[in-house]
Image (cartoon, helix red, strand yellow):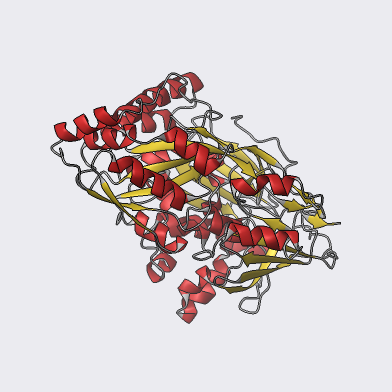
Length: 547
């Protein structure tokens, strides 16, 4: 990473370093161009589930990220449209100190927060909004945090709560982050959905009204679409933002998420042009989509992983012999043939082979029912045991049919004496309960968020993530030490060596069983223009229009 961004022309602050509040009115920036006239067109997206809310700092799934982060909000830095590359967002440029511990962001002038029925901004975006956004996650004593005490799984999973020592506004358009230790993927992390910038003025209004939790129900951001309404299990409605700071991104006046859980129903709606974009088709439906002259089907190798997480805090799953027995009694080939139907490849590692740092030398334990029985006997369970397996209620890019997969696992594990009960919950409840560790074994998965091994090994398996996305609740010091060591240097060779050793430990300890990496298919009407598949999973409508 270069020590200074040259991705955009620099707009220098008009005043020397003073407090943001004291001189906000004194810094007169050029205004943005007049509001754009948006095409009178509506895009309907048949989405797969109801978001739990729109305060995306407290969520970890693409259901919330699609509906909130990439419609309503922006971040200091952004991933390019359909890309893994970092580009300027609400920060026009940034500088990194020579020791890698200070990041100074120079903010964009003239950016407007949304005007809605519940909030009318009196000022433009500035440093106070950045400081509020991050201080709320960092400081449990921050007033808004105390008024609306939610968890911030990603912020904590990444170790940012422990590593950020200070966030300060140097002037209305300059913010500095000071870290305790070098964090190699820090910039990429700030481009993630949890880092979406909120309005400090809106938060103050909610706090004074005693309605802090409304930030999760009535979002206000600077993004390309303005939230208008949400009816759970039915629809989310947005207006195009005519004042969006990035010209040309918004190409429709209306965007509607038509929440449609059943993938077969989503496809029928797409074929009838009741929606123009749909999420996650069934693998069995791919041929008919390909043969429909009115539809397009862009696709790419998924940056994802579907797996079985074992809650290692619960008996008998705390015993590595039991986990190994369950792992080697999974008929992975049969599952991939039936569940993924040609659109998946077997997974061996806790991250996909397209991720740098992937250890190509790791091998799965052989599928061996007799050896699995012997391991259970050695662990003290010669007659097996009862197990509850959670199955997701929705299709995901990493698992198109969790119910079928669960039934196949139930049959596999019965051969070694494990009696499996399959349960499920509504998607938001499923994730909430999993974060709190109520499950024994569960089907879950991950789509990479920022193209670094830390996003897999740290977020899914690190000790800092035990109350977040580490659904195995596995905290193993030899592994965790390697992850933290790799995070604290920018030397690629050193990081690769640490991650390779960590993957070897993972394979020995089996906190989860990797199943598959899937191909991502994106069915569209051919009337849609400008759509790109997001490599990190959410569905984005930047630059999307209608012919």
